[in-house]
Image (tube, rainbow, N blue to C red; front, side, top):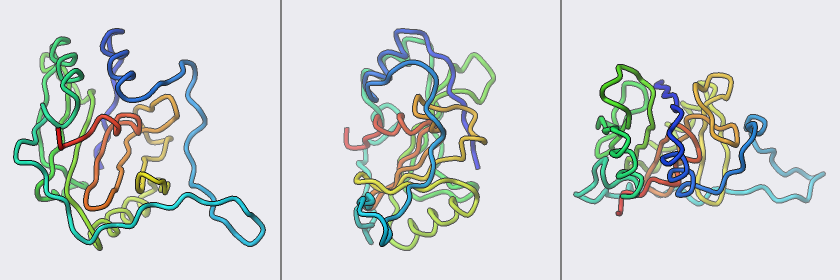
Length: 193
């Protein structure tokens, strides 16, 4: 399991990233995420359901790179700060996912594992389900939503958290999976750019 810590960004970069990601209120993080309760006979509240998992993995564009995985204005802001991307295979632990990419953006002049992580990989069917189950069995937290299945690191083990208390998070969609060092970072990832 790889953990990546978010570094404190200069104001201009932080505003650009947060504006692109989501409108966030300042202050202390919300309580840690928890597993959503399911509906039962005593409750009429609907439970969000994940979209169906595709049995066919999506193919990434041939032009996908660290420079195209996230918005060009975010890439420009990171370069302006002197940051560069280190490209590596998208992997769950030691197991790479064919066709996937992970990009760790950081300052290459500073020896550190601190930075911003963005990744995407094609994954579907039984493989996607097995990866989700492995993460949950390892203590990660599952949340179903209209966007897909979020699997996030236990906040007690997260080196960094977003404004909502989420650390490193995967989002499984129909035929693909994304990963970022925080849940909010996931909204920046789109390999079709």
